[in-house]
Image 1: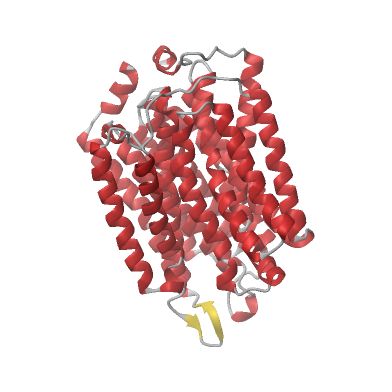
Image 2 (image 1 turned 135 degrees about the horizontal axis):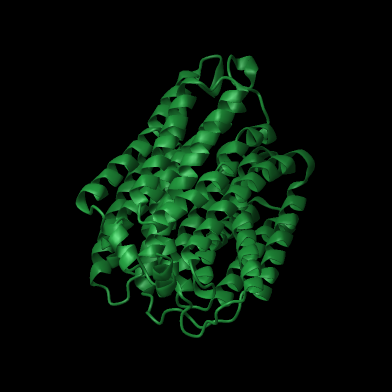
Length: 482
């Protein structure tokens, strides 16, 4: 197995094998990049009340900051990993760093609501750079580089989630909004400089042409779907029309890509054993995480005087979810190793089962602090294991010249899944409010929300079962043969 990995994953043309000291530096800057880009996705949520008062806008207006980031992420996850295969790694790292730094500086300097929206969109787009290590670690390391790349991504995700949640809570307490964005810009600038100092020069991994029209088309239908889900409670029936339009446009895009001479993504990858299942699982694990975070946030920050809730602030909620982030250090590495051994179904099933157990637990046990610590640990264990499998599987079935593309597909559907999970929970919590406190959901809706969220892991189990039945042993044979 080790010899097989070395044969498939050895450095490509023009890339020299790295000495051990360089290996450590590459892994270090990769972890730093993943940490800061993932953290930004978890930082803005706790800042919404501060933004609302700072800019003097309504609740619906300030949430457009998160929507702008979501839409920017959708476009970034389509484009950035795909471009990485056709542009050298250092150039992509530089572009991404400039976008992220600009996204933080614009609201820091201009300090206006429109600047916040522009900055949020750029931050979302640039955050897709978290996928870049999956490509450049494969190209610049020898041996089991897929194992290393996926491990770095998953473990840095844990750090990023903790830094993001706790950092956002601390910013609400102790920093002004401008100071927060200036610090964010400095972090991105330092990260970019470190990456450029460590990542070696290389030639583009692929000479395949990227279809501009197909790329724009994909970004358009992904944006329609994300926008519809993000505004489902605000726009009502209009969102269903947008969602339908996005789904139809997406289906037409798939049909066109099959005939295209310059496809955005090589859809032939999805015919490989477990590749489609990995993408479906990535989408559904994204839905699990988004649903979980929203349910925990809303309940724990509900003032206890209304009859339920813990009355915590943003920082307190973040601390309750620390086990969610930390448990990925336990499950991520073990899960990736199992996929390397040719057993992806086992890890997807285990991840889904743990997530489902954690969500069902919280459906009936979410009134005490300790209950959240247990539930968040279970969901974190499961989702990190699932993500490890979802991102490792595509990497193992393609060559290094398609590493960026193989990262972009599950990452894009993960974003769609996150929007789906958030839309489902937002809709559920909007069904019925307390009569004495308008805008505060009825407490029983949290049980409903957790149980609905538990349906996502069930779908992962079904998809994995179908793959096991259709291709028994095919993935292991493919990895071993390679």
